[in-house]
Amino acid sequence: AVGSRRAAWRITTSVEQKEKSKGNEENAKYAKEYCGKVETELKKICDTILGLLDTNLISGASNGESKVFYQKMKADYYRYLAEFQDGAAKEKAADLAESAYAEAAAVAEKDLAVTHPIRLGLALNYSVFLY
Image 1 (cartoon, one colour):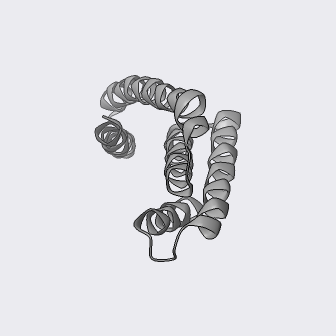
Image 2 (tube, rainbow, N blue to C red; image 1 turned 120 degrees about the vertical axis):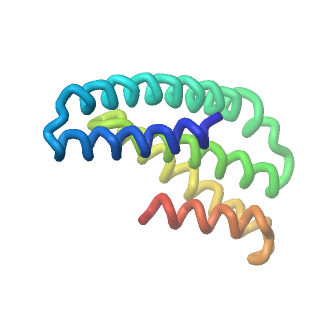
Image 3 (cartoon, rainbow, N blue to C red; image 1 turned 30 degrees about the vertical axis):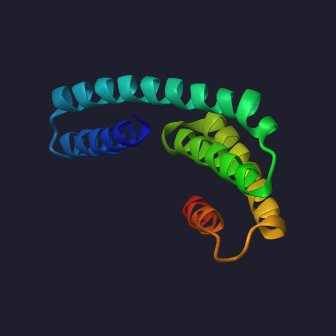
């Protein structure tokens, strides 16, 4: 659900920019309106998942592997929010993503082998965030 909406958001913002550059303000307005709907849906989904992670999953994680997995997931969803939000909301989401990635990396360093798939996935996603 999130992946398709993120793709829709990227495509719609691209269409909006293209229409503006061509001087088609009417079409740009429609694209911007649709983009707002996608952003609302994305925020709702991300907030729901982040709520589950914070209230149930992270606190119930019993070993390093599950702790890293859930912290990485938390960081990823904050990164998704930071992709489309502006201003203070974007900064807050980015800060929360950074701290969740850092926490996951600390646990991964301690508990997971350097070749562990979850640790490798964390390294990839953290580097995408930092880029």
